Length: 188
Length: 176
Image 1 (cartoon, chains in turn blue, green):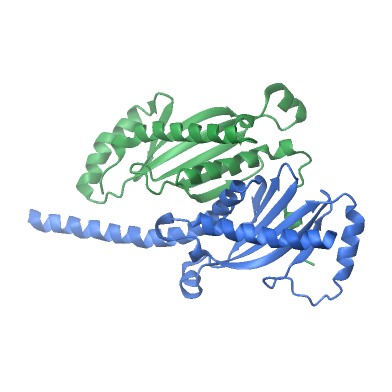
Image 2: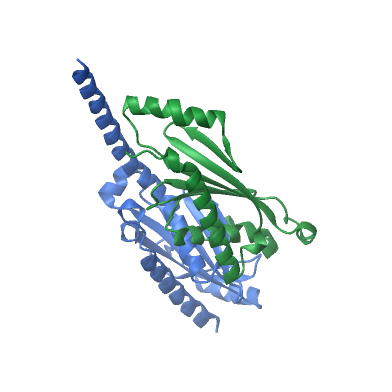
């Protein structure tokens, strides 16, 4: 009789263990959103920027950094495109990331008017990836070049919470380099 | 032309961003300690960040809460600096399911935590299969940001605090 009860205990233990496995899979997918935010913060602070602003509307996460000696600013909008496990498994874990590179400009108004006048077409779909557009933070006097990218999160986030930070950092640096080149070229 | 720049709050001075700068440094320091961010919540007064301690033999996760108390105004910063309460809460998670083991754990460890929740300046608490140890530190944010030396100081502070919390929780970790 006690052997039978012991066996039932073991069946229960097995059920709980399996439940933890399933639960952890869902939890890991839920964490991915904030893991992306954390990994972007760590990468960008590591390359010399200071985080000066962070907020979220639940779906989109906004980060703003400043390189304090040069006052150059970098902005991110991060959006996980596969928040539920089903989408993640079927379509992959993708995120839409907008990265902007901003420079404080002394003759801000005239430059911004010139840049703005160049965009004549209202049919330009700026949400397409890879299109570099210009934007302005009028209050702070910054002009930004920004681009939308779709990133495969599985490239950076491996099993057991391992992160390929080197790859993420390289991708951020490469994007910032291109945006800087474009923006400085346009402002000359 | 689309713009998400309006989603950022306009801060008049760098002084107002010091808690965010500190958060950036905390995230980087924890990344260097092998702990990726898993939860992040921020409002104007407090910031909560949870980290997964991936290869720690005892601790499962740690949550850091930064609550800035002073320095919101130029006068306040001049008089008392940028003081904040840094709460560090480490968690041990036990995946114990056997009813006999659960009962044993409840009768010994958890009842002891009810009786003596304080261990020095560390507070112990438990929730279901987790036991938590919490330590509160009063810090001056300026001592941990803006330079490489300050970055190293923050790294040391976190390493030492986690070591203290790990020792306080060591006896509550059960082999699964």
